[in-house]
Length: 112
Image (cartoon, rainbow, N blue to C red; front, top):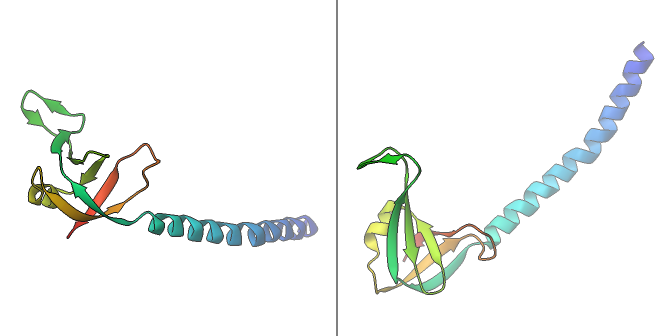
């Protein structure tokens, strides 16, 4: 019985020696990919929208608001503070996060 436990421990040790560095490398790659998604853009604001999540009933919304900034090229999501500062028809330099090839909206993180 102790011999079986030793063999199992050796197998688990070999698996851990392979998986731990793999997960660390994968984590570093994902973090690097995420950091490369930051860009500084000059945008022209065409429109801005406020949408509530599912949970609204006749004038009583219990959901979370999502703030959209719309440009000729794409639309972005942002925070309420940035949404309130942006005026329609103006140009702004912004820092964005995310990639354009994904099916989600990029996010405006900072307004210069």
